[in-house]
Image 1 (cartoon, rainbow, N blue to C red):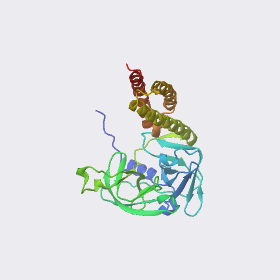
Image 2 (cartoon, helix red, strand yellow):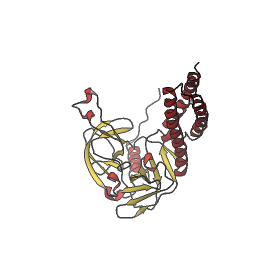
Image 3 (cartoon, helix red, strand yellow):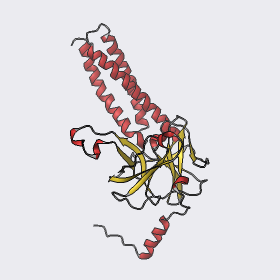
Image 4 (cartoon, one colour):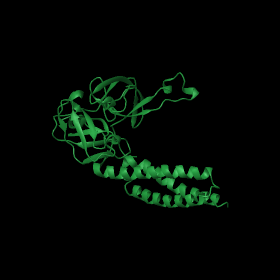
Length: 302
């Protein structure tokens, strides 16, 4: 059993001082930015200070597919970011860009409390205006919190803030309402809104351009899978059609090409945000090979 580490009062004061923000705390309206990617995607980001550094924080899905992004504060001043960024290692939908030419940033809330009033602040609907959306924190997990702030697309990447202007999490996704009988009459019958937590995150350096390249490979594989599924279902519905054998053979060749694409995904699966999608594509490809062999036997009448 390892001995417990005990800190003296002086040591605790030293650690607390080291963790205090060294840059000015900005008001939320000055720290939150409108984000637009060259892919056409729009969202929200915010300046956050932590351990002496300042970063522009947003969701990975906001910058996904973009080679360049523009971030603008509400006074029209740009926040200059480059190609280099960091991504959450554990797959959380989070990225951050180092910034230097800014006056300060927001700080994280030191604790989270169920029922605490909060509000989302972001680019609701992509209209290039920041809108505060009040609510409460109604659920908590290791990596996420659930809030009732009625955020919508465009708010992604924006902060969920306490009444004191401290960051509780990052507005990330909306879960569809449940239609099952047991959900009726409960809040689970309505849409639910989830924010990603910022505490406990470890970051991995990555470039925006490499993220875009990996995402392009993944998108191509997804499109190929959609085509394969469509033709596979057509052949299954008409196995005795005169062209079924030729179509099945072509489908097998297409699946071989899909395998090459999956290999490409494997090469870039070190990108945490894409790992789950890459794993699903790899699993699909393995199952597809056996399924196509059965399909070919079916059209041959064996």
